[in-house]
Length: 337
Image 1 (cartoon, helix red, strand yellow):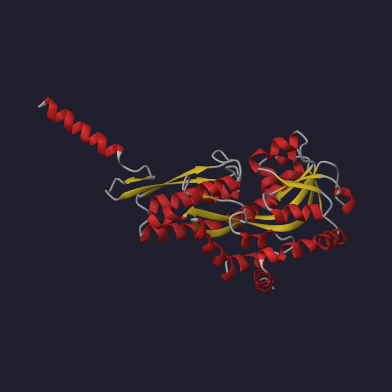
Image 2 (image 1 turned 90 degrees about the vertical axis):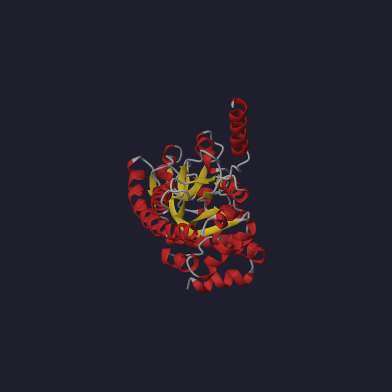
């Protein structure tokens, strides 16, 4: 009898060891269960994370326990968007919420959104991102084993530095400038006369603190939630680029879900987009006042300065037109008019 019991226990252990560790299991009601880990760079009080909490709540509740969602903010899993996207692509994590500029390393068509002064306002950006052009680009990511769900936003990006207020092009000449991991962004600031190079966001605070960089650029919310006001003294509201983010999922994982769970993920993603965008704009207004209260000097650039910026970066369009594609660039410009 003892031999039978030992054999039975061994068979159970063997079966357990042979089960693939894919994040799937059995839910309490007997159906297959799935775990979604979402890795992103921003802090818990930034709009992307807050909206991700709503995504988690909806998916867990409406899947009746078939899906659980874990959030990993502050770059705790990956210090850069590029690494997080690669992890999603390889199936090491199920989802991420990167700045779209980092996606251009995986699909060059996304470089079009890195071009400076492409959109004048939010409505123009939404028209392109939520329309045929943006949705087509998200669908193209399946070739990289990535399911592009929706575009959300970080908002318009602005320029900061430690040297002084920016009132003319001369004020930024030669400054060591941190950019996103985007060749278009780097070329843009080099065209303005800065010494620009990309650097991982998760390590940026320390780099600014140590003087590795004099200047950076980001949306208002990231200046506040990441306490960059402690290591940057001057903020100029250039709005030089509208910065979308994207909700991305490993495509094999998405395809492994049942049809009803796929529909739930898509619906929750669309609700995420609406909540996050609304909250992002509310936070921009609120956090700008907080930045001033913290002692950061904020200035609005003159029309003359903005015109000089636009003139100086015009060659960037010519430099990347062939790589991005003339047709795509024209389509984006026409769709935003």
